[in-house]
Length: 500
Image (cartoon, rainbow, N blue to C red; front, side, top):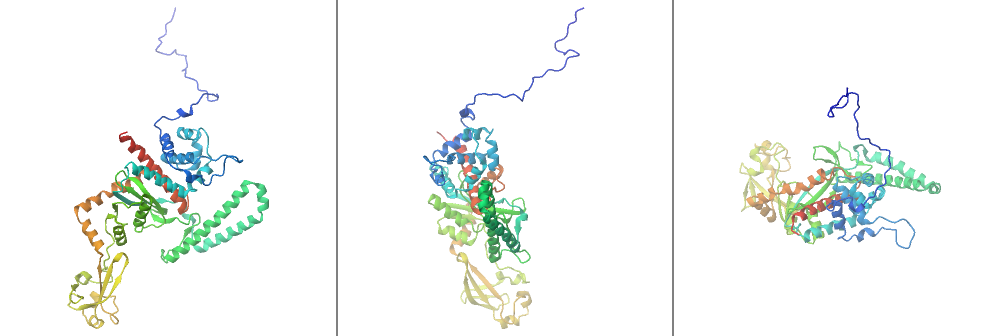
């Protein structure tokens, strides 16, 4: 009898059948390098715009020249494109760039299937500070020429970026001196064996270089401790310390409410398209001193000051308001710098300086009990502030029944109650009047969306949350690379929506 099987069901004794996979085979196939990436790929845009810029400043240290022996150097245009493309993908490690040159399409297209050594990439990133600054300014020139940067209004804001250093590397001066003594002895011993080490080749040269760099880092750390001691930045129960691997790194409060070795990265953004027009790395945790230098750097690069500048209360000091006005910049910010006499030292509220009346005709202050305080002197303080000092007679205060409530900490045997009156400069008075208007409040309200946008982009999209380099000079180069990448990304995006 003939049996018919249903083709929709496998035979009872049959095994499943799959497509075989052979990973041991070797395949030789043609590859069109030009077609590795599409026409709209970011790597093509980066390569094209670099062809419009002057990169001659990067050629100063190229040793390979025509007619002489030696290995060819990598073209600066290629290394710049590789770093910008890598940062745009959130990659800041030179070793990772070298590894991805073997398979990542954009890097394979840029290098023409070649692999660039990570040492070359690392040295190039921090070895051309002035040339990199010039490149940043050239890109700003393109953005200004295409009216993407107008300088009608700018915002200044800072963020803390963690340093490439461990907390355990911070040591006191005595400990640093001990390490420095050992390191110098090690360098001297290696110099005595220099003849033998030269025969050992490049490995010995690298060891000598590492020993010298360690001595330099320890000397820099010792100088940083001495600077902190001179400026009295630390309290007595908190002795001065500095990192033995990165002396410029300082403990700062970060955005996640932590305290870690960091750098203060200052960004100035143009309000029209939120493009970065100035970047500076500082080891000073406070933002109060960075507004005027930022305005001066903009004038130096773009040959003009912005029309308006907006910043938060950390930047708004009397010096900043007066300095911005002197530069012709219309400044807007929240005020935190008012000088007010504190009510501490046990002074009762009814005897606060605001309770004293001023007799303009006699140029005297009258206390709540009717006693007069005579003018003593005027103090000239920073920012044009004038402080007038008035004091009462010691005999009058000594016999007053309210002296314990009016001035309990005062030495009544020598002097009476004193009151200071601060007179703001006319520029500051006009600033306060301007910020009290609805227009001033509206302009300041637009600060946050502009100022914080670049910081969010750098940290979230470019993954720039920690420095890869050490030292203020190298971290400045790193910040320029990141901001250059950000500006080009914004430029490519904004150019697409504009008419051809």
